[in-house]
Length: 126
Image (cartoon, rainbow, N blue to C red; front, side, top):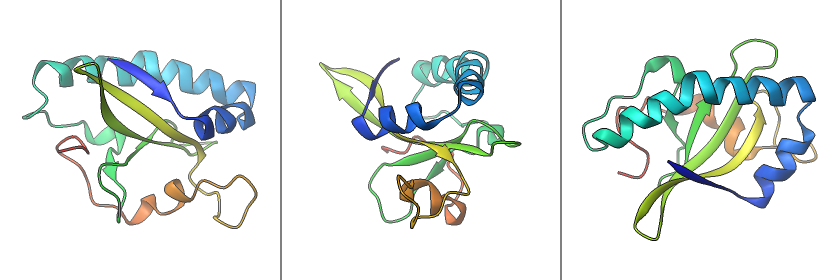
């Protein structure tokens, strides 16, 4: 599946340490890309693995959060599904640490509210 990165995501990405960016890249290759390939085969009936903590953000229409690291750092990213020329894409919105507070400079308010979200069994856009 193709993807797009919003400007805030790109700024957040630069704020991650080199080690954190390496963790995200490994997680994408080992965990997320195989799952997305399975999702693309049957998007309407796909059940997302609980290990990814795939969740919908409250008060939004289609923005999701996913966990890329559970331990040091506790990493989260927000995204949504979109459409580009009739093809599904992932639009990456923000990335960072789950514990960031909304009052901090460059904070990820989408991520800080993620703890109160309900579990997802279908894609966020549906």
